[in-house]
Amino acid sequence: MPKIVSRSAVSSSTEAKPTKSSAAALRVYYCICGEFILVIDKSIASLPRRRTDDSIIVRAQDSDAGKARVFKLNAVMSEPILLERPGGQHERLFRFSCPRCTLPIGYQSTPPPVKSGPFVYIFAGALSQVQGQVPTDAFDGEVEDEQMQGQQTN
Ligand SMILES: [Zn+2]
Image (tube, rainbow, N blue to C red; front, side, top):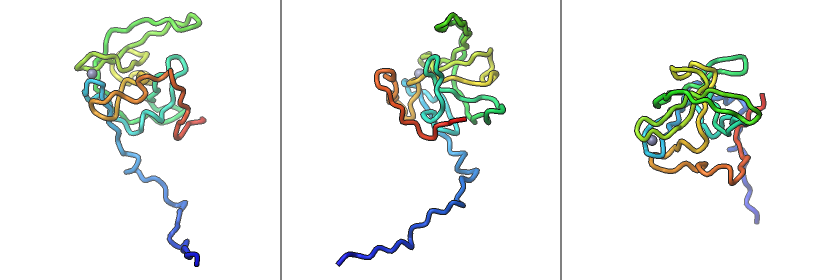
């Protein structure tokens, strides 16, 4: 005799909207050397990537396109370098480095301080959520993984 399963327990309320407190769940990221680098209000794995160099785009200022992410970067800013992109475009990069091991972890296109420009970019594979562990995407580029959660279409 088949067991009768009651569906009364199943309830997926559409009224359950995310609260302000759930949006404030912060993620912490570390350099490969174990140094604390970044605390941010959203997983960087779900943020959009830059086509030019596949770096992670962190919105640093509010604009019509969206609100700035809430984040704090623990990094040392170094002298800008001039980079030539494919197509002859030149871009000035103000790079962030790990304060302990000086490994480059990202950049912005405007002079200090951090967040003086619209975006901060984090190098793909530079940061890990687990202290002392090499990030899973450190060898990105060899394997294409398009599994993105919460992909932004606007
Ligand atoms: Zn480091």
